[in-house]
Amino acid sequence: MDLEVVVLAAGAGTRMRSHWPKVLHTLGGRPILAHVLEAAQALEPSAIRVVIGHGAESVREAFAYAPVAFVEQPEQVGTGDAVRRAGPDFARSDWVMVLNGDVPLLCGETLQRWWGSLGESRAGLVLLTAHLDDPSGYGRILRESAGGIAGIREEKDASAAERGIGEVFTGILAARGPRLGPWLERLSDDNAQGEYYLTDIVAMAADEAGVAGFPLPDPAEALGINDRAQLAVAEAAFQRRAAQALMAGGVTLRDPARTAVYGTVHPAPDAVVDPGCQFEGEVELAEDVHIGPGCYLRDTRLGSGARIHGHSHLDGADVGPGAEVGPFARLRGESVLEEGARVGNFVETKKARLGKGVKANHLTYVGDAEVGPGANLGAGTITCNYDGHRKHKTTIGAGAFIGSAVQLVAPVTVGEGATIGAGSTISRDAPAHALTVCRSRQFTRSDWKRPEDREHRADHDQESGDRESEDRESGDKD
Image (cartoon, rainbow, N blue to C red):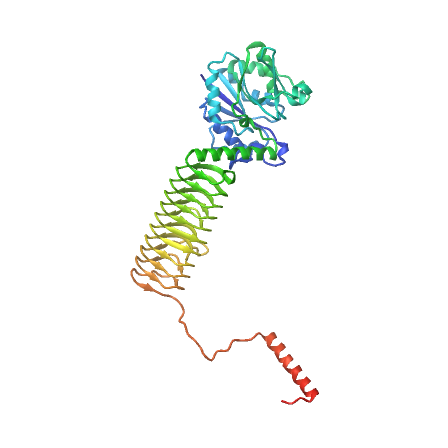
């Protein structure tokens, strides 16, 4: 069977109180619409058409990469009009599935099960339904006495009795392609809102082709987003789902409710994540890694047995097996720690490769650098990589020992096995297996007097003069 998908994403989302289109607000670190398109792509349809309106250009730009066709709805006059604009060649497809761009929790797996059931359906229209404890805002499913679906009543047009119905239309449906076009042409805007409701085709289908329902196993998948409060509810549901997926993959989350995933985390058995950690972009965990409390990881890979101590910030880092980071360390883009390397507290790296077993334990900055295996960088070591115009590289050979408070002024090379004395500023290459020291000569002056503050000295002199005057007046003598 051939399937075409239409995604409705034209609404202004006025209740969001935002200048951004509603579908560009983020859930789990990605635009709401991205989740819907991902679910749609799981069906491998012949085409995905996205109907846009409010903020159309922003939506086009945000999804320029996506294999979809955009259709513009200049005036938002109802969902029926939006779907009609996505035609009129629906007759070429066996089925047309209509998804809402603001329902991001619907899983691709659910859509695949639904799509699989359509091959057995005799109905001309199949609705995705859900039973909600609070159906507010949704169109209610109207059933015949025999149990079949007779229609949908939008909440704005529903009677008090109809509003008490708990079964709702999720806004998602599948219609046989050859029938959908004629139904859309017969829609009318004769209703309280003066809009063309897509739901009005249900009554037509009930008379002509039959209407069936496909109930969602998890009603949370039907959560729509119309305001910030609903976005927060959806975010919480997304995070619970993300935490469950990590734990199913073998990760121990010490506190799932305080683990935030705003991207994709690839789990591994026996990884441990302490409370308060946040993941963004693509994060890859290997077996037996341990991430301490309050860490931030973005686009980062952790090798087997790596240890990330608390409150460390890794963005674009590759941490090798058995390496250690932190606490309070920052690894920026293109930072690579090879096996067993150690980056300690208040150390920052950027575009740097630290070889096997390298140690940089305290208060150090390593940028645009290549550090050979077994090298040791003392506290306060800095690679001075920027001259105000260009970045330059520092190369430190294997087994080199860099003393504390050393500045390495790039471009510069420290040879293999070299030792750099503490407090040195190295601006020329330091030879291998030799001691290099560059600092001022220490000297002592025993006749030196510490200068006193002038105001303090003036006050002292005034106080002394006052005491002498008082002594003279009283007749006191030394």
